[in-house]
Amino acid sequence: MAGRYNTSDGRRQDGLDGRRIDRRRFLALTGTTAGALAVGSNPATADAEYQEVTDVSGFSCDHPQFTCGQEVTAADGMVSTVDPIAGGVAARVLREGGNAVDAAIALQYVLTVTQPHGSGIGGGGFMVVYDAASDSVEIVNCRERASQGAVPEMFLDQDGEGLPFDDAIQTGEAMGVPGTVMGLETARERYGSRPRGRLITPAIELARDGFTVDWFLAEQIANNTWKFNDAALETFSDENGSLYREGDTMTNPDLAETLAHIKRGGAEAFYEGPIAEDLAAEIQRHARESEYAVDEDDLSAYDVTHEEPVRKEWYDVELVGQPLPSSGPTVVAMVLRMLEHLGIDEYDLRSTELYHLIAEATVVAWGDRMEYMGDPEFADVPIDGLLSDEYLRERAGMIELGSSVMEDTEGCFGGGDPWKYDTGGHTTHFSVVDRWGNAVAYTSTIEQFMGSGKMVPGRGFMINNELTDFDFQPGGPNEPEGWKRPLSSMSPTMILNDGRPEFTAGSPGGWSIISTTLQTILYRYVYGLDPLEAVTEPNVYTHCYGSVGWDEGVPTEARETSDEWGLNWDDQPSVLGNVQVIDIDEDELTGAADPNRSGQAVGFDRPGRGRGAGRGRD
Image (cartoon, rainbow, N blue to C red; front, side):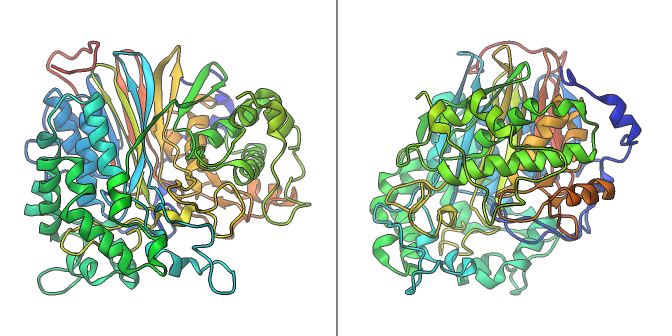
């Protein structure tokens, strides 16, 4: 399957085997979920084989039908996620006969409880669904929208300058109409096989009865108190008023009640009535100008959109993913196709040439991202031109070993002219595949870690600050406008072979999402690494505004040489992304979870094994 263009001799010369996990030994994460990189030290379990889940009734990693670990194989279902508790809930749904979408819905509701720093019902996201019955890939787009009264100048101060970012994220103007609940309910009605009550009840029980706080949640609670409102501070503190720490049992009765309302009334219970009133009131409370911020009318008007995925041939497979307003899969495809034109398979893994070409192609594609991309409902984007081979060959032709396209530019590298070819952070990512062949790649977010820092009083969920993904300065395709969706870098991606998925990938990490996702795909397909090896292989990260970030394990010689060629490298390594993947073979599924947090893959095998066909509506 993978490794058609494997330069395995280069891999063995570098002596990579046997030390994949060491380079992910954590430094302590700081920063944002979707808006910045994370660096620091992990006191926890980066090298643990798996984390036993004790908070999910009816699930155990010791059960003979489940297999847990950083990389596992199974025949009848697979889940890969950052959160073992949510993964256990999703695996149990698969065991009970639910399909991949059912499991994904249950998983996302649980993440609202156990991973409130990264995603939840106060945010939005993108769900890429492969439906085996129709043999098609479809998109459920539940990206947040600006209020209908938003204006291009709403993030400017009185002098016409952009607000300081830490100030902007706490304003009501930063808080978009959440899309997650509508997205989950739309997906359930369109693809699901289980009732809402079955899929949301595990999250209600965890919020009501409690769950074990992991090291990462404890760290994010401690790091983000500076922006918490009173409701958030109270919810993230125990009965003695102390912030929850690793190993504590956290409850969130307000959230349990909110989810119970959704269980009874569906999406309408969230977007209209008392929950919507409280949500709108809290957003308005933090608005600089109330007419620019989301109100009850905006909440009641929200709906998801269904779109055709973006597609691009690459070697002998097809890259398929979320289209605009997420730039992610488009830029992933642009960079990977440019690298193919540049003959990336001629260069060894961890070579100077490899990293230099990745960084340069990313910079060139990023120039096009910033020049042209925005919400297609508002911006005329030359997407066919940007993805055309003629244009990508032209752009790849600007890249040379021994020099950098950034040497003669100031700020962001400029876009090209795709029109002549035109024919027409923080965040979490998880993947699910079921025994019928249905697959889900889903990236969801509330933007920064803990979003705006503001919790809806009495409702138990954090509000996103997603609208800070707009450009603060007016004039470009990603300027704020009424009812517009901000440009994203989320990259839920599937790789199709002969029309069927054989690999899913995605990551959190803000702008670095694109880099970590495309490099995981590159290392799996061009260099033939196993899924966990591809996930943990050192990445580099850049865009078009600054230096090159790098994972521990990128060789010093490669950095020093490409620095002489014009790249400017960070002084210290970062920890880039949190990639979750599933490799789909005809008779076997392999899931791999990035070990830089507490994530794990969970595989499911029925007695006697074997996979059938269909959607799983039994």
